[in-house]
Image (cartoon, rainbow, N blue to C red; front, side):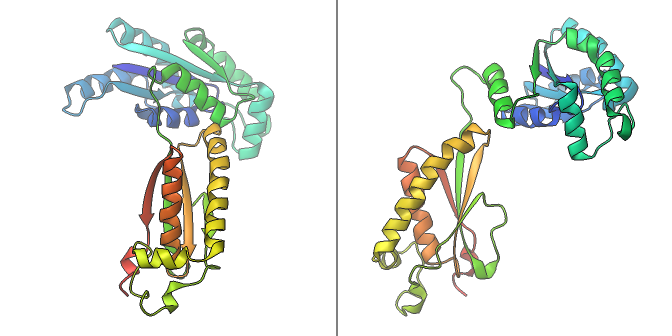
Length: 287
């Protein structure tokens, strides 16, 4: 089993790093007492659902147990376990600013005395820092930059985590899509609902698609949406996002949004993106 111990200064980004490792396929645990790590490894090896990659967050929130981290690491290595220590750090100035922005007290100092708490913590973590295999200073790094650094060290050679684009069609009358990164409203297009022969059909049917794309503005809009997505997707990837959710809405979520969503998905797939399509309000189509 490979174990990555994620430790370092409070406010340096350990929670974000732990999430990144989880996306890389590591079983992630935050702030387990160090003496229990060996017990956990032994338990998982005996389990039918064993795994070979574990990421453990450990910091001074563990109180007196944190002082046993070095001893726990040494014991794991003595037992033949592959242990990698990742230490996250940041400048005092940056840490003070982050705590003030979050309005959180430092674990080792009162809220009004952040700097003293940070300095006390530096002294306490110095020993484990000296054992670290990798130290990352997050002072000037975005989350995307932190992800790229971690990926570069821990992603298998030639491996990659797919960027998934989810296109979700919906009807505004059934409620706004709450988890969309980009929301496109296509209610300005002529509505097939008012054509009796098309009312019971959906945007999946050729007749409805033909109706929707029989208007010049539909092709123009689809071209512009595709261009916008093609421009934005690399920017989302650069910032460390694992995926993008695009909402396409019309009144009922049955005709126009479905036709446009399907067409946009086909366009993005041809551009080499991994795309999944979901029609949120399909259950209402027969109402």
